[in-house]
Image (cartoon, rainbow, N blue to C red; front, side, top):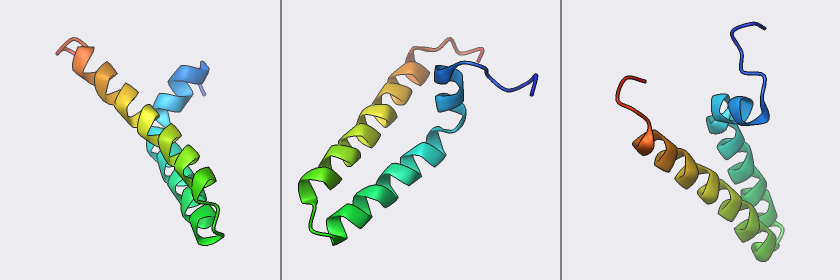
Amino acid sequence: MPDQPQTVGGLAELYLGNILYALERCALAMAEEGRSADAAFYRGIGRALAEAHGKAKAAAPASE
């Protein structure tokens, strides 16, 4: 996979949408099981990742 990023950060950025989806599905399942604190924890991770991605895109040069 020569065109694929080979770092954790690169892979996480490439698959961020999938990761956020999986975290939300996990949180939904936990909420249905009555584990609201666990669901909130995983939603917090998703929110932090999304916010960090947004900040990185805003700080990136316009040429990217």
